Image 1 (cartoon, one colour):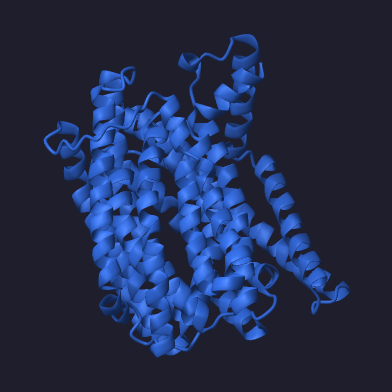
Image 2 (cartoon, helix red, strand yellow):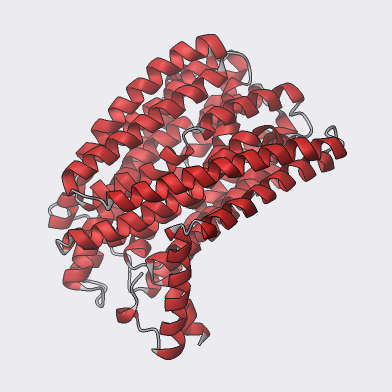
Length: 541
């Protein structure tokens, strides 16, 4: 029985979303622990400015060469080969495609990473022109260490693409957990001897573990490594054709991130660190709710369009879209109301002082305005990738980046790091709206009436929840010591918990369909597992 239940969870989109969300929560919680340790140890100052700025060059390579290939191109093409040729033989066309792409990717990562390693002294001053000599030297050292990690991430993400295509979610879902454990190891064990360089060594260790946890799973699926380098392979060419515009789009997005660092480096010391702390906090719900559903739904979207079944796509898109809104809108309201409590509880210790808390909380508040948009963008973009259209998200991304750069520069002159947060939110909302409009134009009706009705209900009950939580914040502040950690914890958790209870109760009372979708899935799962045997062919996610 338990094997059947586990099969149901690990081989369906809904089950995959649950696994990915669970692992994402674990990873994000570790990420918060990681950030708290860094904030306590170094504060929002020069050291963490250098640490976060050092990620930008490795991230640029990773996003262009790795994510550019996988998120938009590899999975749809691999799924098509998997359906057509199967994966029984290690020498099948399916695995030839995977091996050729892996070897090409590794050559590209080693070559580009090596060039960036050699010329880091010339490149870092462009990224962080406001850094002085010591911060500049430290950023260069950290960058060179972190560049090593991208090779391991290259292998790891090919494995992720294979596992996603097979709807095997467990090992790749928990890989980010291993990554954060590696960084925490660097903070706890290595930083005592090597300082912040030890944390960078932890990044590399985390990347190695991120890879190692996934490789056994793809071998169990039939994969065997072959030293193939077939540039003429039809699938390789198709992936290359699809990834070029996506890679360009990701390059533009990374330039957007680089611009934030460039602008931040010219502002007060600690600006880069504060921006990254706030960004990491707001990324928690986006990763849990937005990316988990988008990743899990992507193979279904690809299959629907491969089968020319628009109705199937619309059905799954509508469900996923409404689920994201049902989960993310109340979270954004609570994050806006509880931003000071969140920052103080997560980061407020050691060298992270009250001034750092206020700046981070204010920036987080502006980030929270666009949580719904940021959570929907991954799913909307993957809808176009499933159509093998990588150009549309790029064009929309260019518009969004332009808005972010202009507003970021203008508003940061007035409000500092807070202006960077507001600019980011405005650009994200524009990005989401344009993607949705263009997808509607491309596909047609996206179950618009049901999405609109659900959105109105969610907005109403989220507003009521917000008022109740605001009242609880004021009420609890009377009876607790707000100068102590326990007092802030009681106030924040109490107000948030009451708000969530009110939200769920109103959702049931108003018969929000998202509640019934979850309930019906549980009932159907029980019926399939206990009465019909739960065969994969019968299981409809």
